[in-house]
Length: 250
Image 1 (cartoon, rainbow, N blue to C red):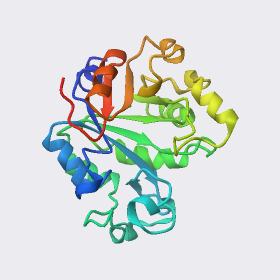
Image 2 (cartoon, rainbow, N blue to C red; image 1 turned 120 degrees about the horizontal axis):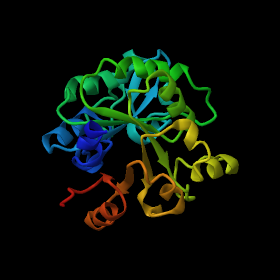
Image 3 (cartoon, rainbow, N blue to C red; image 1 turned 90 degrees about the horizontal axis):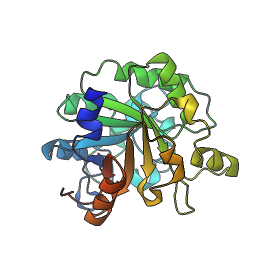
């Protein structure tokens, strides 16, 4: 717990998808964004998915269009194709998780969000992700909205710190699950006990709330602070903050 607190709870604020600037040539979840986070000594939050040849890549959306301008789905690509997909008309390509680990090399901590559908059978993707994680010597933790992914890690790699992401899923959230039942279960943390989280990371707009208070025995993080006002609020209701689009000042 002391090692965990030293960075995720008591350390620097966490740069959402790296310290990026999509409008000025530093795309989110790019090597350049992660290099920028290291330069400013911020911890890094990033998103991972597993593509068709089982390579673990760093990319947020399921579809390619927003970040690459090309149609298709990230999971259909192969490792050989990644560098041909440029991020937001820059020279930055879709990186693998291993490339990010090689770049950061333990200089700042990394919070790895595992993006899987709650309806997807767990095990296969998690296995490939674990293969990359277990060979990294820097400080890191994982998190996911999917409690069953976390449950898998609790059984197969209990030494890795696990965070349960949570939200009330407002209609303007592009990642909002289509199923009303799934949204209800996630909002109420119905499967949280199965996930055995070491921390909760909750939507800042919905803090404080009765669901997170039930888990007050473990650390609470919040996402996403978009300005200094948000950041100050977040510090009042959580132990650390995932931020974006500004430089936090304590």
